[in-house]
Image (cartoon, rainbow over all chains, first blue to last red; front, side, top):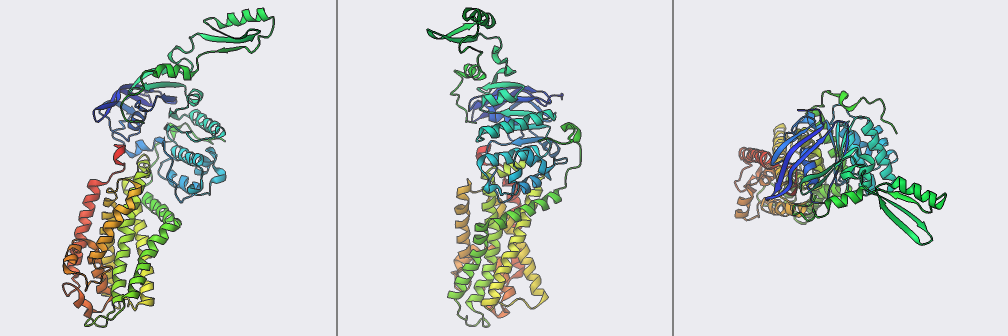
Length: 288
Length: 282
């Protein structure tokens, strides 16, 4: 159909008459790391599950890797990887046995031991999955998602339950995969994670995309007023200005040198996001 | 931490995907490995029929009059082999698959390039291995302690083999179909075990076939278990024991018919009702 990894136009899905996805458009280019944000119940999970070939749609034009995910077949499935929101069921197999087994499903898998190292489980490779911590099981999930060398990887809340160090390690892994040419669709509640990883993102609310762009420029974030703050004898001062550089220069002259506790901040992704979804919460469809 | 010598993802294709049978064998391998590593389940699945066999065959061991010297213990041993076979096929699949569905294991598998048939081949291999092991355990106990005689003729072994395989097939298929009945993993065991327990009573497993009320046995006769037990009695007991059966015969023709019919019914149920997702997954 076209060269985009994901192409969605006018996607609709309702549960019992309540629209969960309501005319959603989305385009993800090949090789992109794309973030999907939105409050619970916004239609995020429904959208992702339709793209993964796990849910039927009511209407709309959808192509994932050039194919209709409503009619998934084996060759198509071997080109996508999925990291599910819930943990892998604890089994009696070891990490190595599990990754090795599932690697066999794919025509051109990655080396299982390499994948285990990639997700940082080399030391636990011979431990049974029942003996792993929640965060370690999550990494098994990630290993199973990437072992087939997918062209498109779905990551649904991948780092929930990770400690900060494990999250950083996971981010490195995602960057590595992206550099390798993998297209990645990431949904996350952690805005810093999306900001760190995604080249572009979309905010979904009430089943539609309400904003789309690079994290740094989402909803005019780059152009917005900055806040310059500093401290003097009278206490803390905050000044909202369109010309922060000039303000800082003026402050520099006033203090003739260092400005005490100087900060220049622009609205964070979180500020912009919360602004965007304000008033759109409380939609009635099922939670994601 | 590097991905060595991997070409851009898109260039690695297309390569021939592994075959359905090969993946089925691989699935069978991990199913069996998982089964035998879960010690509690092994103990429960394997020991329960053996423990029940020992209990019943020890408590009730009188010689039955006019039945060629057959003891009640021998009846129990033959019947318990049938029940053990149904436990390893019907109930373990019905409960196991219901749990896999609820835990999302099935949905996960469907997200991978796995031919559906490979999953079922794996389950069949699991049932074959566990069913054969269970039967061997029960035969050893029966022969060692309860005067069970292994069949002396090739014909009897042949009867044993086809009753075993046909019964196992029927129970495997109905077990896969029954896995759709429990609504979640927690309810799976009680929802499956209770009717199975009742079925064992009315199929002449716990109550010897010559003492169970005829009306109850007639209900049991609609299901495979009664016929499997009857077929095994015909193999392991002397022919004079025919007199204990409701029809005063082993009825191998009818056994084949009923078990064959359940294979067909089970297959149709599997094909029409099997779900990879839970109801709430839509």
